Length: 256
Image (cartoon, rainbow, N blue to C red):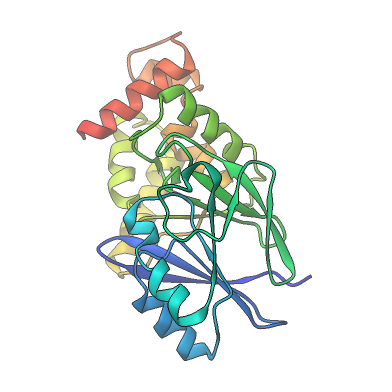
């Protein structure tokens, strides 16, 4: 089975939309279309239709293009079951353990509440690709608009447990700011310092810092390292519970 081809489509000020293609049969899907125009342009350039729209959560900057794309292509909209009342015109709802197929590849649906109460992610194991919306970012995690620190930590653990070579396709280009924050809580993390330099060089060229990998995040993302004792010491909370450390990190990032 061939892996999906994945195109990164920048949108709005810092959003990413992802176009997924099974080149063997011409099937195309899009993840979190904040607006329709970049998707239409990409599909027309490639001579493709659109079969599926995958939504990770209900925020408008992730579903704003749904209606126009559905009207133009007749695409099926798939989104989180518990957010059915907040995403207009959902055709199919999914939750933990459900599967979604794009061409010849099947994704596992992972429930990741925290940023929103019904947030989900889509993991395509053959393509080694995780579409995680606003739960996990490169060097960061989403704000807790609707969930608790304990819920978000549990969600992040689900993603941390995926294979290290899983590529992370998140919802926004926040990586440079996230790196600056991460260095304030782990200034002695050599892998983080080296990564921050690479990120600055990448952004200086106007290029995306996405995708990263689960392995990179485990080594450098403080929000996946809240159970590491050296990090707890670094924030002045040695021996505290992991959820307490995570909540402190998230609070500091909110004020950063």
